[in-house]
Every structure is written in structure tokens, then in C-alpha cells.
Image (cartoon, rainbow, N blue to C red):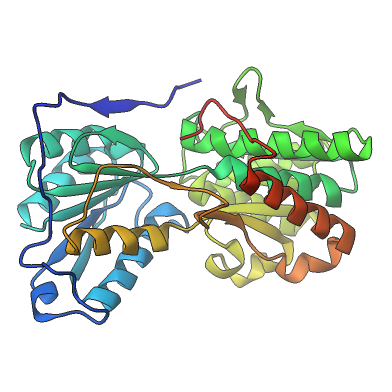
Length: 353
């Protein structure tokens, strides 16, 4: 497994007070004259802005912050690896005092620019960069994926469910670990033997497409999993996951658990009939919170960690597939959620933030 990468530098670099220009005290909702002079720039990873995943969710959050605080928010879209470092440089050159970068691909560039610009606040989504002026925004998605795995095992007719990823990276495998453990918990509670294809938690290895953009790869892999009996699939692969929804629609009798955003709302309407639920990251609220903290001169590098307890992660409604979920199964999932929040049930993963 590719372990979680920690990027950092010495304590000699101190960002004593990072704030958006001319913004103390914090403006009221709707923005103030001072806030209107302030700006934030976001740099996407190579998945682009409308990835139906964390780029899109982060941008939606900054748009919400723009509406609430009256700041100027703009996105700089990366289309490939060679765009990443220049785009972060462009964001810094804009003069904005908050730069948001999205995904592990931007970790190196974020660290480099944070070292060179200690007066600028940075936030990086779905990755950890250790620096006094960088705030990691990460999510313990294993907690919500545990609920999704339990749900998948509970609705499966074949006794086989599956998951796959875009790449063997901690933010991806964290979902997969939770999903596998949720299925195992269902088997323990019900004396069943539902199998999971595509991920071996002990070995930290499984099925990956190798990228997050080629939908055809996701469809081909999903068809292979369906051929092996899987009737619920969790793709953790950004746009590639759309291949799973396409395969599910064509084959019939197969449902999909989406990730990051509510796929029922973000994907094409034709896929709604196969979407069982989604494992959500509430990136939007995290972005609003961070912008507010910077405006209030209260920015810190302490990581934001989304959990079930703080609402940072959750599973989406069952929407059209609600009839598949019995009242008893839904009640069991509610009970598991409360046990995780209370600490009675600990969902662990080597990739946990």
C-alpha cells in the first residue's frame, strides 16, 4: 500500500497571523466592504472542476462562502500533471490570502508555496501537509463506509458485494476498509457469509483502475465484478465510478454506492434507479468554516477531520431504492451510527486521518 504521505518543514517557519486582507473583525453574513476586497483561489487536481467528487464539492463550498461573506472566489482548473505546480503559483500570484488545493497530487506544490509564502493561508483537501500555514481538510470516511457496507450486505440478493478504487492511495482505501468492515459486521450480527470482491483489508490490496477519469475502465471492471456475482458495488474512483453506474443500469439487478457527493443529485438522471446511497464528505461546510475562520483572524493549521459526530461524513438517503431497505435494517444502521459516534464501536483503518 502507498502509505499516507506527511509533508512538513521545520518549526522555524511561523505564520503568526494569517488573515484575509482588511478583514478584522469578521464580516456578517452577506459580506462587508472589507470582505469584498478579499479573495480565495482554489486549484483543482487533474480531475477537473466538475468531477462529481471533491473538486466539485470544494468549489461549491467556496461559492457558499462567497455568498455568505462577500469574498471573491475563483477556481483554477488543472487538466494534467504539468498544470499542478504552475496553477498553485498562479493562485499565489493572484494576491489572495487563502489558497485551497484539492487532492494528494497537489501536496508537493502546496508545501513548496507555503514555505515561500508564510503570510498566505493554505488549505488542502483530502491530504495532509504539515506546515504552520496549511490546514489539512480530511474525512474519516471509513465511519460512513462502514454503514454503507452493512447496508450493502443487508440488501444483497447474491451474497456478493464489491468495491474498487482509482488508485491505491489512503483517501481511496479508507473508504474500502470501512466498507469491508461493515460487511463483516453484518455477517457477524446475522450469521451470514456475504463476500466482498475487490479489496483485501489485511493485505491492503485489491482492484484498481489506475486512474480517476477513464469511465470505460470503470465499466469494464464493474462488469467483471458483476460476472462474479456482485450485486452492490462501491466505486471509489471519481469519474471512473460512472462506469459502475452504467454497468449496473445495463445489467439490471445491481446497485451502486457513490462516494464524496450524493450521486442521486450529482450524476445523470438515468443513473438514479441504481443508486443505493452515497458515502458523503461534507466538504462544503468545511470550506465555509475555514473561510470564516480566516476572515475572523482565527486561522489555524489544526486539521479539520470530518466524522459522523461532527457531520463531516454520512450516508445519503436511499432515494428510489428505499424499498430495498427494510425498517429493521435501517434501524440497525441507525444504531451502528450512534455506537460509532459514542465511541462504543471503533472503525479502524491504517489510512485513518
